[in-house]
Image 1: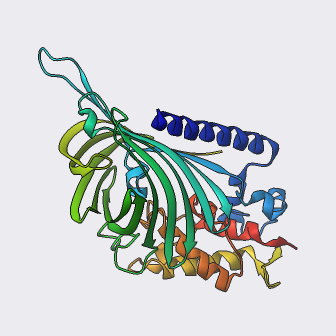
Image 2: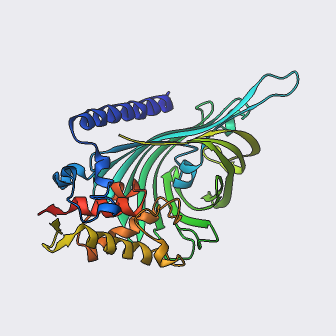
Image 3: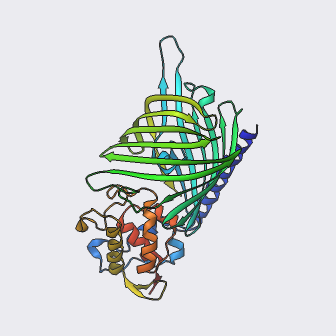
Length: 284
Length: 93
């Protein structure tokens, strides 16, 4: 019951924020004019269009909100990984499904800080309830160049909403500074990685480390994310990966897999599946 | 057309664009300098991930004297978008 209330409250917050943003958007100029060039290359010395002469505050996008749909909000990499729906069927058996999806709403607080609220699900009938997870999160980011800090609060429950975990989290990552950290290693080697260090406070302090790596070649992209937690003095790990081919727009053919023990139950499991992936980033 | 930065210095849109391109080049070691231009895509071409783009905020504050909204940075697609965003933050002449 508690889990359902938390998730329902977050969903209501998301809807209210979306509604407020839509009203603010209809009242003011569209923020994407701020990102347009004042003049095109071909006419650099021509007169700047009137739109560029509006007050800067109105064109800064400070009040814009952004809706993202992806695999999971657990990290930027997971959010960029497409949300997937996999259907499996064996002869004489019912149709099974595997769903990994997250929705995240992001908005500015200050020039160097922003807020995210999200919901996520690792679900589907092919997963036993102990390996399913439903979560809701509110997370605040602060850019303290050269590091990025994220403080959040997340509720995570298993498939039966029997095992629930509320935790405050604090994690950080360097913005860059090493070869391949946050950007391709080189134009020829399109591989990048990003480390995160974090601490979760729920039923005790639980430090964790996460490493995300990505590679891309044309319409094909691959990602791997490994997380390790220190739970009651023992190391627990979970790895998930995907290989996706962009079909059209935000639609992908995705092979995804996972192995290890994922929160909140930390029950061992693993699977590989092929399915349709969907990714969306919409600003309003 | 000229505009003032936050310290009262005057800039042209061309000057802003050149300064921004210099900053992007500095943050993209290994890339051929002349291949980084206005139309270069930060994520798709240079491979910057979601957070790496935040690294431009500090040098832009230091050289162009403009403070950009971080989340606006997260939405930028091209070097030209970045130059346009900086230009948009400057006070009109």
